[in-house]
Length: 84
Image 1: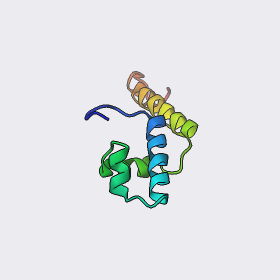
Image 2: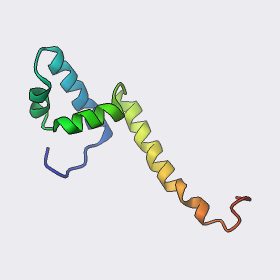
Image 3: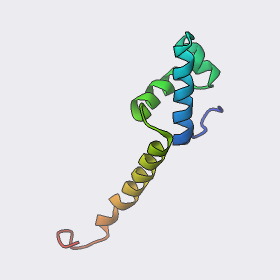
């Protein structure tokens, strides 16, 4: 993957699963990461965030995060914060 390219949640889960399979077959983590074209740092960060999720669960999580970010600033619009 090119540097600076954003990876979608579905792709992250697939890459994590690929690495799990390769390490179970006896490959080292460094080699498995190199073959899936990600850094070990990205692997550990993604495993912390997406570890154990299915593809549809990861997609739903990202959708909810986007919605929360969108709705998070809406209370600033209401001048009577306690009544909105």
